[in-house]
Length: 321
Image 1 (cartoon, rainbow, N blue to C red):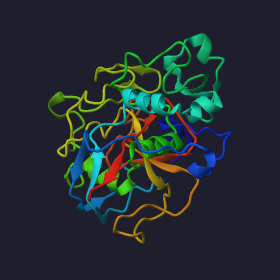
Image 2: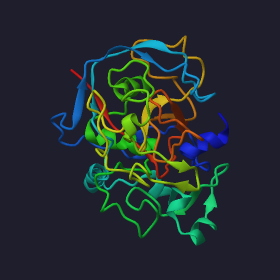
Image 3: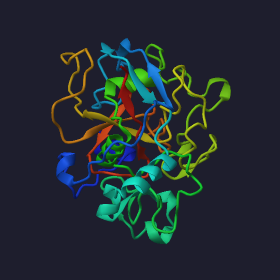
């Protein structure tokens, strides 16, 4: 995997440390909200499934394989990604400031900025389509002056791993392990390319929000969405989960490693004990087969815990008792 291929998915912040800071040391620990039910979540019985892929479509260097049998215990998972409305409730209750707000900027895709701004914006290296946009954050997705008020049912984005963890602490949930995420995303199917099967557009029907056309200059928007889509805009998988392919990348709990997974634990694996970046899964509205086909259900990549981009969000899980 080249660094450019990685950056097309979610650019790293770069100037900040990738080392995780314990939540209690940041002063950003929140008492759980008065959540007494698993409303909006799907209970999964767990079990053994075939994780990863040996397909020729796998991205070299991403560590998608080998295929291995993995067991996960029962758990609940959000049927959708956390929405702008959900995150707003958290912010209203706690006054939380995201990493993007604390740093004063986040990465925005070039096509969402006026030419005069994108041309002079500080861009990430080595992917020039990511522009460092001052004031861009979850509530101002393209910078000050834009707003999510008409996108409250879209996935919240410009969210770092640290932000996602803080939300989970408040909500009384946690981030999924990578194994839990893939088990849920597959919807009970075995080794299919996508949550719904192997054809990207069965019978000509779009099943996810990804890039159509020629990346990064021309998007035909055949699926109906240039930016994020409402979290229930496409049919769910067989487990009742919406949009585990495309729309917005989703953080997982695990540190990322591309090493061979053959020798790893097979019972509720949770990734390596340390690392530089956290796993992200699912792909986004910027993914395209010609460049980055990581909207496949076995695909994976990573970003540093403090990084945020306009295509990076999350969903939550909790243990089933």
